[in-house]
Amino acid sequence: MATADHRTAPPDRTAAQAVVDVLAAAGVRRCYTVPGESFLELADAIDRHPAMRLISTRHENGAGFMAEADAKLTGVPAVAAATRGPGAANLAVGVHTAMQDSTPMIVFLGQAETERLGREAFQEVDLTAFYAPITKWSTTVHRADRLAEVTAEAIRVARSGRPGPVAIAVPGDLFGTPVAAGRTPRPPAPSRPPLGEAERDRLAAWLTRAVRPVIIAGGGARSARGDLVRVAERFGAGVYAAWRRQDVFPNDHPLYLGHLGLGTPPATLAALEEADAVLVVGCRLSETTTQGYRLPDTTRARVARIDIDPGRPGSHVDLWSSVVADAGVALGELAEAPFQAPYRDWSTARRTWVESATVPEETEAHGGPGMHPWQVVAGMREALPEDAIVTNDAGNFASFLHRGWWFRHPGTQLAPTSGAMGYAVPAAVAAKVAAPERTVVAVAGDGGALMTGQEVETAVREGAAITIVVFQNGLYGTIAMHQAREMGRLAGTRIGGPLDLAGWARALGARGATVRTGEELVKALGEAVGADLPTLVDVRTDPEVISPVATLSELLEAPR
Image 1 (cartoon, helix red, strand yellow):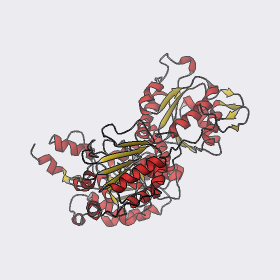
Image 2 (cartoon, rainbow, N blue to C red):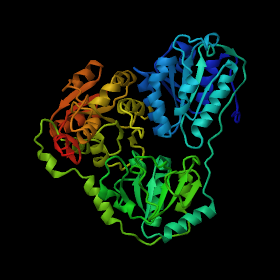
Image 3 (cartoon, helix red, strand yellow):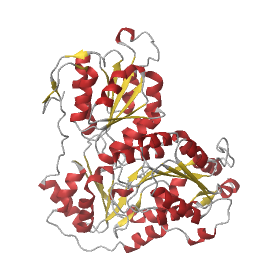
Image 4 (cartoon, rainbow, N blue to C red):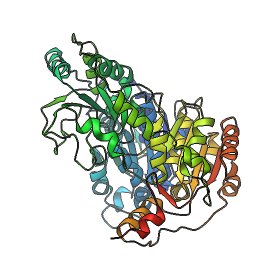
């Protein structure tokens, strides 16, 4: 257990107060929760601690997404707390998101009292077993005097190696138990292993000799954006952003070649398919990033991977080199390597991506029953600041956002690689709480917005003046697209409407606007950015436009 760097703690404290002292000493600042009876003292201790903030949400799902987004943005773990079976079940979606997105999170799960454990007590579930598959470490603490120690270890585990969530189940009678005065354990800073000179020069020489070197950059490289640019320029390498990591490299840089997401245009993938050297940095080579475990193509290219996690070597890829190192440290080393590659012309590949990411002119004259999704993205680009934090939900609307919104600045994208619906609104609330000086914009479909949109009230209560853009088309669009393409008919994906979402937002204390044209959208967004309340902009979009390359009718009528 971590015991380094101790600080003297005040006497006469409860186990909950000892836990909160550990959290605060480690730099943890916020806890997101729906309060429950099994952790009353923990919520009280957080609320009373001068360095911490307790944020009560409307649903545990929202609390989980908020804690994940907070940590993803700041790099510091946040706390999510829930009670027993129902609360823990609701919270699980956000915890799974943190696991797949490599986001540090500390999860406290209130449990039945010690004397009642194992008797199928009220709302009792084996929380350690429940959370084991979706966390780095899951444990139950049975002694109050061990809670501070276990909390310090949880923080260490959450931040070390590949970051992720840790769950601590605590019987309800422990938090209020007095514990002896002692020292507050403070977990050590996580290790950041370097490449080393020999490995650095080996990789640098390989990149220098390559004819068409390409870099795939994931979330592990986010903290070293400047060094990533320097490496790309030094070795003349084209750069692809991993799935929903589009802010890892400036999209307006001439070496940026695109986003490896869902529905990536085949022409955009050509440079990766033709590469003879592929350097994967801080990326776990997920199904989406690899386009169905198809790329990189090791029959054409040598593939090297730099990642802090030795347990995720990209098992489907025959790696020429796999180095366990911190991606940010490694990029800094490579940027200083005594090698300089010749100029390589990526203008054709770059132009191909730019064309795919440019709003088509023909959409300006769209005559459907609602706005074309491309028109919505065009309005966002006109009205919103380039450095806004954009949180995006799951859904087919996101295909247009991923293509059309250019991430020019660092720390501007919060999106779940897990593909969880309902992420955008809670994530935006947390981002605005963590960075109140930033413009924060949530982008969602009507399906995702109505899953967690009640957190608009949380935004109002916490003074988080976010902007929410809802593409309302009355469909679960992604599944409707799959049904139309595979089945030739729809089942259960028409969700009704149009609904007065702007009125719903106003009922929750926020501002609301309904728009049907580009001009109305630009006006509403401009007003929202300057408002002192959250604003929901309900954009009525055409359900026929199901993706950037197809209409719903075309898919339904296509021969099978």
